Image (cartoon, rainbow, N blue to C red; front, side):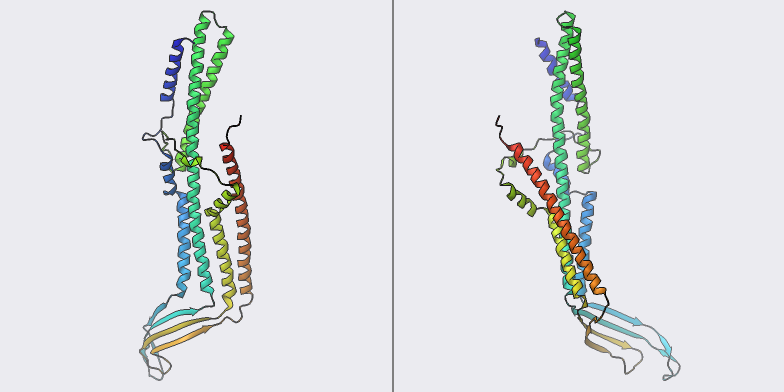
Length: 358
């Protein structure tokens, strides 16, 4: 190639890289850490997970409140006719009653334990949503980097193909190259140019997907900073140890285990539903009519024992047991899926890190 051919290639490459990339949002290069920070920011999926967690906490507080004191004020302004009193007379009253369950056979205790486990499960689900968002953002981030790298390579190939084609036209004019050979050079240049244009379109799409993953649709990042992944050089432990460690730290599996434990506590609560309950009842009252059957102050212990409730207890226990079986099957399926994904991903990582033995 003549000396000016190299100059043409350099100029073409610089022009392509400068003016060919998508016209995107301005600003400093987006780092991986900055992108991952959006995983914990407001997002419909994250908001829904947070709402489920708050709902579970409210349910837990509601169940735990069953053991609180109940204070009730009851009053009435009334009048009525009483033959003994002769004619109509006021029959007003006001009472203050205090009640608290002392023991209910463990029903509230089991239900509160189930609610607490449900809350923990929802919290783990929230962490899983954040983790999944981080994985999605990370995937989209590296997709953009790979697309940009491919664009750079194809831009250089296009520049080289153009210079060869341009030189070919000069050679064709002086009779050093046939028309067929020139046509082949032009075809190679046009194919390279089309592939470069396709890279340009894909770069826009990949950036749009990254912006959507960050919950910033339409705000396409311009430049991405290549991250320094120092941890990639670590020595990996045996595959089985990695799988066990990943399973132990998987928030989705942790949530499923909490839901299963909560279902077992609800079965205990259903079995305890036919046990007696004991409550404290005390209060004071005032009446406009004095009668021997009314107390100004009362204090007592109430016992409630459901002796026969038909098949209700059996139905509740069967329902709770079926829920346990469903959650057990769901947990096993999730564990198998996670193991499959982990082993597949870890095998890929190990293969990519094997030394070149050629």
